[in-house]
Image 1 (cartoon, rainbow, N blue to C red):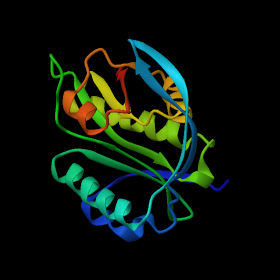
Image 2 (tube, rainbow, N blue to C red):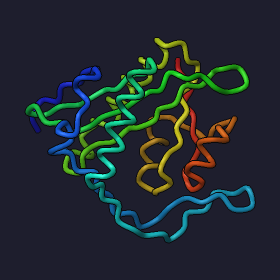
Image 3 (cartoon, one colour):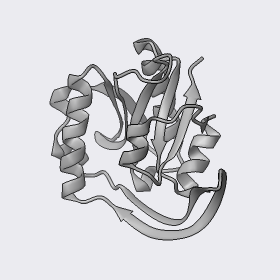
Length: 179
């Protein structure tokens, strides 16, 4: 694989064409669900494939992240976006300890090459620089997504963000202590 370059993106970088070569595809076979206070891996299968509507919505969200003082990161291979992450700049939690990792995605063809782990590490540094004690992730409940977050050291959130739970009730609410 060619060298991957990581950089902080500015508002002018965020446009629909940025995602021309990005493939947000995921074949899900199993998802985690919390039932009677226990996590259970259930047979829930579907294919997730982003189209133009999802990318248009994403562009608006990422521009808003930058306009509100958050950070958007990009991973590039041969000048094409192969991964991205975003950290919001709105503190929450009983001690205002959390900032949200609002997105972390690697293009389908580039998964398994450490791009997501590197983006997560940079996002942690950015959140720490903004003053956070913990990173909060409302994460896809798929087995693969949860395996990734567990591998980088995330655990179930001590405090749940009510709005994020209401927005995505099937997501797993995670946190990562910033060191």
